Length: 264
Ligand code: SF4
Image (cartoon, rainbow, N blue to C red; front, side, top):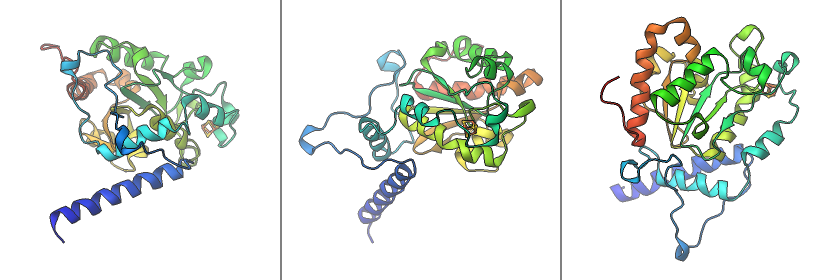
């Protein structure tokens, strides 16, 4: 088999894997534009960045990215329809102690999606993600560090209901809920995902590696670059570790063409 044949078979395998993934999400069909109507499907970054500073999304297969956008255009799942699907959810035992379902918030066309593990007390009270002390720290990372408004990114969690006493969500709870965040990611189709802590990193990436090893290293989820970093709650307990998160966030900024301050 020559190189061209091997490359063709690799592309076929990649498309097949992505379509299997979409089918698992409930997508019944994808819309393919005719060859004589080729418009760029991948839109420029939603962030209001100077165009000359924007960089192409690396590591993402053009085939996979195009398919994801096309599925979105074929309207199987929007953030609104996914929220409707969740409804007044009782799919796992976390529903018993919750005050509110914390779905997620931000720009539905965000370039960056931050994924945490689950709501805490404040989030459960307000129905919004990352609004407690850890949330303020995340907001500072986004607004003071990255110089982006929080409303320009999207923030959500692996589970939508608060685990009792802020414990980690259990495997059956993650299994019941993780499909929703995966659908949110497909609907948003960001250029980068930042996972915050062990729970989202391990469950989105399907790894048992701990965050201390994973952080700062580029990973990939469904063709989208993923940067794992520490959870803001951990930084509140261990402020000396903030420097590592800044290193990770600078990698995200560089990848997206966001100007990084010369000095911190
Ligand atoms: S955590 Fe997710 S699956 Fe469990 S009850 Fe809440 S919304 Fe439903």
